[in-house]
Structure formats: structure tokens, C-alpha cells
Image 1 (cartoon, one colour):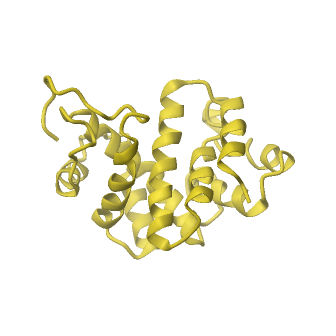
Image 2: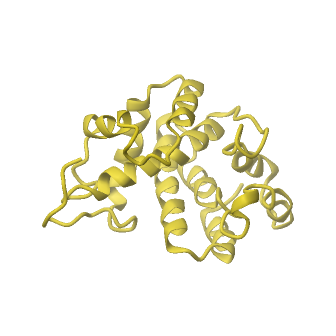
Length: 193
């Protein structure tokens, strides 16, 4: 089973851009919360979440095409590599998410982008972000427009959950780590999300 320490070693050997490291952390904490929801191994799901964009910085135009072989050779279990590949389903891979781990990763990858964007607009960051406030921004297609809402909806359908249910779990899972993911906010200025 992939450990969090090993996931960080592998990811950080390939990824140096601050925004990509921040994204990996966002997904990691959201995945930990999803694992709790499903009664699964929290640290294992966090490890897969942290490692999911292993090749993105080096190969943004061929994302996930340079992931499988290097990770298998590095000793990452095949089922964890498959989970990582599945988050690109329909975009850059044909690996369909089958397990709750895979479906969760597929969903929260994009979802955390909107959560992060929403929290950044708030004076208190994510610390007082509520699901209803998030959902207002989710429904506004101009907000965080690069985040693919159709994929999020598709992932939630795979999970048999609503967007608000998954968002609530992820927001709650990310809040304790607000400082680590630069979402503490600034009391001065900022508009309300």
C-alpha cells in the first residue's frame, strides 16, 4: 500500500511549482475526508490524492501518459496507479473510476479547485466557509470558470451523492489544514463568497 511519505517523495521529486503543490495538498486533505466518509484508510487515500498529478508539471499536454510506468517501477502498487490514472477518465485516459477511491479522486480533483477559489475570496478564508455559500459559487459558471463542473457532476453521480454532499465533506476535511493550504484568509478586505 502506498504510504503518504512515499507519495510525497515521489511527487516532490517531479513537482516544484507552488500552485501544483498546493493543489496536491488540497486534494490530499479532501481525499482524507472522503476516506473517513466511506470508512476507508484515511492516510492511504491521502497518499493517492497527493500523488495524483505526478507527471503534470513535466508533461502538461500529455498528462498521465508519463505516470504508469515510472510509478510501477518505483514500487507503487498497481491498484494505486490505476486510481491515479482514473482521475483523467474521459479527458486523457480511458481508465474508468470503479472503486469509491477512484470515484472520489475523479470528483474532488476539480471540486477542490472551486473550493479553493471560493475560500480565497473570503476574509476568513475556508475557516468559515459553508456549503450553501460554496454552492452559490458552484452554480455561477463564470466563477472559477476553468474548473469543469460537468466532471464534478459526473463524479458525484458515480458516487451516488449530490455536489453539496461531497462539497460539505471536502470543505470540512480541508478546514483543519487551512494554514497549510494557504486558506486562512485575511480579515481585511476581500469580498464575501
